[in-house]
Length: 292
Image (cartoon, rainbow, N blue to C red; front, side):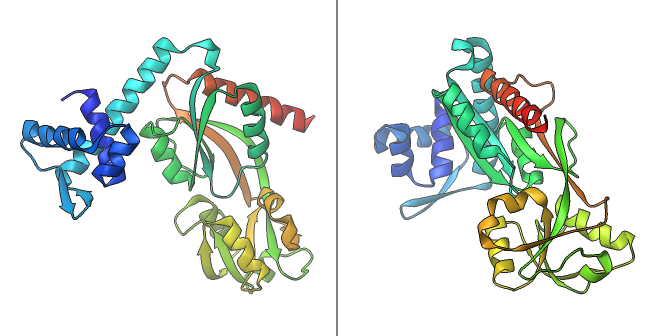
């Protein structure tokens, strides 16, 4: 078994089709099928189940895929650290972005692309918990996340804190926790995750129970639901920057404890690529200029 075979197997596992995997690897189908057969014979186990033209991994195949991904990514990391050229002006940068939005992110990407046009950028959007796992598994290098988040084994650099606001279709003025508790709410994120817990805990501390009628981690869908009058919501102030065209009404919440912390994480004791360092530097500079 060698790294070439592992790369072949990763493509097969992800494409779930020999033809598609061969196309992705820029090779013909028969040699790839032979590589898979040789790998199964060498290990003495069945790695895939065939369902017509599609494939699915066996439990043993899943184990191999997980370790193959880790090994190949680790090798790429070593190669990048040892052979990185042109002071980070070439290469790849993979970034995770929290579903609640990251204010200024598109401007950061544009500025980075202008300075380093030959760096390929991969962006993954998901909730903060999932993004932290992707960083730990080295599938992405950096991730913009929101607290609270268990970040053992990760470096967390806080970028800024912001207030939550009450958003509805009709004007409401300043909203107290008591008044909000009687309004049908669609909460961002999902139960058990950071933002959801911050909101519910804030109500609980003041002795109220929010009237939750739904949960939604997709901010566009959430804002569309509020715009349609299905319910109101409570989100970080910056989320509204991306949805101002909907004409929704915003009310401040007189509860300083209901805040959202945005930060960036990376793997502890981990070599950060030159593109990663450049991007972090760009973000820090942008935030300092915005604050001045």
